[in-house]
Amino acid sequence: MSAPEAGSNIQIKSYKHNGKLHRIWESSLVLKGTETVVIAGNDKTRVMESDGRTWITREPAITYFHSRYWFNIIGMLRTDGIYYYCNISSPFVYDEEALKYIDYDLDVKVYPDMTHVLLDEDEYEQHSRQMNYPRVLDRILHRNIDELLRWVHERKGPFNPDFIDQWYERYLTYRTY
Image 1 (cartoon, rainbow, N blue to C red):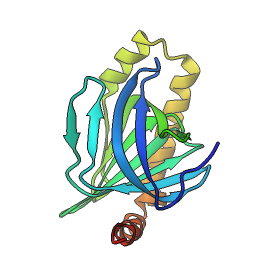
Image 2 (image 1 turned 135 degrees about the horizontal axis):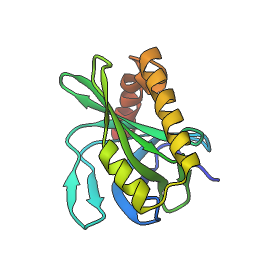
Image 3 (image 1 turned 90 degrees about the vertical axis):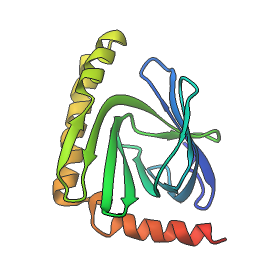
């Protein structure tokens, strides 16, 4: 697998388990790109939904993708703190077209005080039946939710108080060129 180059712009594409395109983030600036980890930033980027609707993100965000974990993390910088939106998803893959992953419906929202809530359990159950998620996938996803929550409690990775700030500073540096 190749890796996107720091300083380059990439698309981020999420799919559903059945292979259908779910959502596209038109442009994110790569801050770190390896075969294992991709960290990118964006601000007011255009997002296209599978039904053709589009919207623009409201605030700067730092995204974190890992090739071994079944989640990705978006740290959104708001005036009252950093909010995290965590997609329970397949590990990412990158090709010359885009960074890609499968979205498995479940999401964890983490507030600046590190309280959190699991979202979209009903959507997960519905899609699990419709798309015949295998039992092993259910176990993998729930194990990774546990791992993600451990990261939150331990302030690991993107949940470390300095992580988002440091990568946002790098994002601003790239944007000035």
